[in-house]
Image (tube, rainbow, N blue to C red; front, side, top):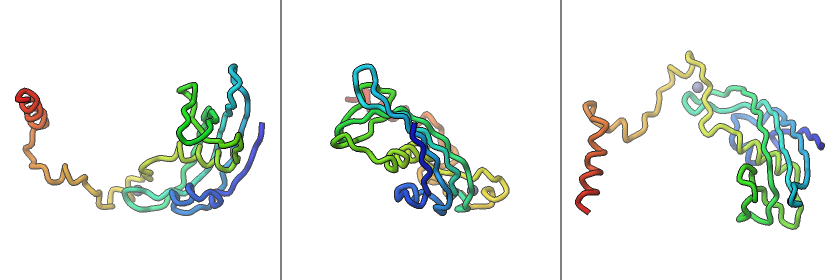
Length: 155
Ligand SMILES: [Zn+2]
């Protein structure tokens, strides 16, 4: 097993996601061959990151833990032989631990981080999705479905 401690600031794609890149990421890697001789690894990370809330824009701290089974493939188009594994392109059989750790962080990172602090978030104006904001208040949910069915009938 290999262990590494990396500064989040060293990981460019992670850095862009965060409110600020302070903090470290601890990563553990176990490399192995599966029963068919394919190169695989278990990648586990732990980090405490400072995220930017999607709703109120405030910065907040939250830990991130993640663990994946990775299978090394020849290039970006490669598919893992085992669907439960994450493909990771390792051209020429070479891989950088930093890249593996970064990928694992990105897989586990929330798409829309939210601070969940009622006090702070409730006061922030919530951006309503345009389709909902424009819909009349009396809109019935199945109207659209009926339109769709009629269109289907006519064809
Ligand atoms: Zn918030």
